[in-house]
Image 1 (cartoon, rainbow, N blue to C red):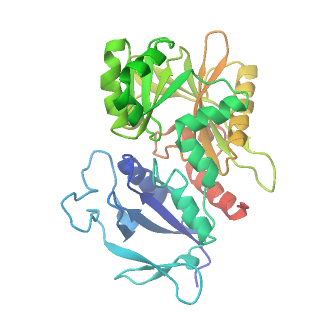
Image 2 (image 1 turned 135 degrees about the vertical axis):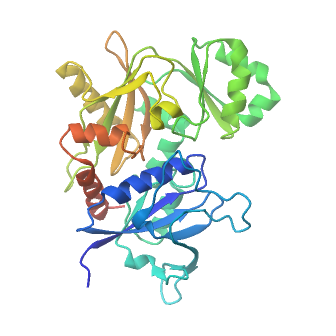
Length: 372
């Protein structure tokens, strides 16, 4: 009988960041320590179908169009490895869930720990975390509240500002407000300095984000953001270096840990989707960031304050702007940061002494210790 820990990898999902989640999962599957862990890959399609995946040879990449059959009545993913559509059912004899599939049933109680690898809504936002807590299953990462707060940029800023952390000035606008009275919104925005950045409130990976350099560009940017969510943030741009710090939960009741900082260096344009995931020219990462020791220590302390302010658990990436006068402006906190090979979270921890495979193991071990 195998003594390996069974890890349910949950990924895909219904958000606009579905493809990024697939790439993240493929990376985790490729690097997980299989001497210690047995991965059980479970993918959710954009239409909500659950599939039990034979992930031994999964080849997910942004360049391949593999994941969605939009014409399928059942909404299944087109994945070029064996997969089986599953249904969720309550176990008759006890509380819990069973995944029924042609390959055999998988009782969720037979999975020791779950690793949600979703990005965006319907997974990173507390929804899946709530389901796992309902059935008393341990899982990697932030709990329901922290996931929800971290996913929603408006409430992230509200909580961080209340905790005394500096954030960029912003205005939150609902789709209904914009449709009813766009002129009033324009008047509110007049108090902010250009450039502005318009973002969906509950999206990540720079999906739906636009830079606005003049009032005439606002309407188009709002249309892009509100196509992703029913609320948008209009933020004042901050001139400064883009610095990111990774956070890992503490072991045995100890305080969380902060990594060395990494820097996003943008020679042209801004850090958009292509720069993050497709290696666009003019953007590079430097880790550790070239900062004075006292600035590094203050950034790490501030990252931990942000993590604790939202009641974080497991992991997070905290993003800052460092201005010319040495002030820190907290941009956002990501409770499920990118996990692709070029993503900053694994990079900063590698520079801090924890390689990628060890990082995955650490997160699983933290999840098994976590008290929800």
